[in-house]
Amino acid sequence: MFDTKTDVLVIGAGSIGVNSAHFLAERGFKVTLLDKDDVCSSTSWGNAGLLVPSHSLPLASPGVISQGIRWMFDSKSPFYIKPRFNLSLWLWLWKFRTACTAKHQREGAVVLREISEKSMELYNSFDDLGDFEFHLERKGIIFLYATQDGYQHGTEDIKLLRDIGLEVVDMDRNQIAEKLGGVDTSAIAGTYFPGDAHLAPADFVKGLASKAKSVGVEIKTDTQVKSFQRKGKKIVAANTNHGMIYADQFVLAAGSWSPEIANTLGLNIPIQPAKGYSVSYQRPEKSLNMPVMLSEAKTAVTPMGDILRVGGTLELVGMDLSINQKRVNALVQSAKTFFPKIEFDSLPMIKTWAGLRPTTPDGLPLVGRPKGFDNLVIAAGHSMMGISTGPGTGLLVAQEINGENHFMETEMFDPNRFN
Image (cartoon, rainbow, N blue to C red):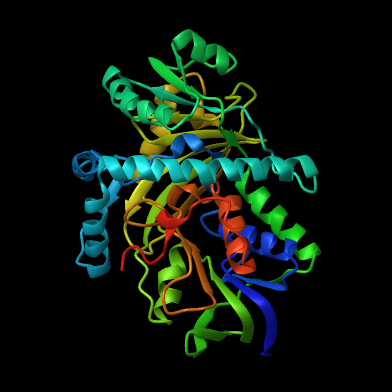
């Protein structure tokens, strides 16, 4: 064990932490990036890899609660809350309920769209530089509907997305088949978002971490923060299992583990882990050429190089990474139903995965300085948008620490808004 000193200590080496470290190093800061496991070892690894301004509607929206209650009693549904008495969960649910308003949905959609589109711009810049390969494809995404009811429900959300400026193209079955390169689907209709894109998330996060390391970022893996040393409103050092790390500024970007770390500072940040699953297959020769969202099932199917990944579900079950095979089977079954000619049962399976998405009650991330701390920035709570908004968040963190003007208004991301 030995002590070290750095300008900025970034805690968490997933999408948000790695992007933050990159943009801080770009500004000349000496940065140390640590993770309790490894770079991109958690939620940033197995997600659907979607860059989706089309997903700008926050989770807390009108109608979500009534739909969620119906889903809770279906063991194959995309949503589940494990029944238990947990005060932080019940407080979170109460705050979630109060955020499910049309006003919040619209205001939240505007800021999520802005940070998503800035992130898209930054992803394009990374791709143009060509320093590492992460399989960025700017093909858009198609939302597919199995039923007329599902399509009608979807049109309500689509109207709001159009209202905030997103380009949306309605499609019939023939247009869908043509766009998907002739792959048969049982969908009755679809909506196409040409401004979306997709990538291989682990390739991006690990590639950017390697790039950051090459310009001086120190990466410490298997390093867990146990406590902090404070002096008034300033954090002096983080006490880890490998010694003290002294820093001038600290960034908490540990995803679903952020509340546990924040608690050692006396901070209560309302993040609940929302478990999601994915199943990765060896991509068949006749396969999707672009990602789709199976709207009623809340399931994404994404081609990533040689991989075809099916992902989705949202379970509020605490810090539990066990695999619920019944829900995984339902996830895959939804893909089979939409694409009957893709023989999923005969495809070589690469991995079944579960990850914990850090989710706030209002569906918006926490990005900024908490009250009572002069040298701490929180960057967590991105739920299903950690990859989609990662570069934009990392840039905001770097701008905040460097004393720059932010590229966007960040009031709705204020980490103090729930106090």
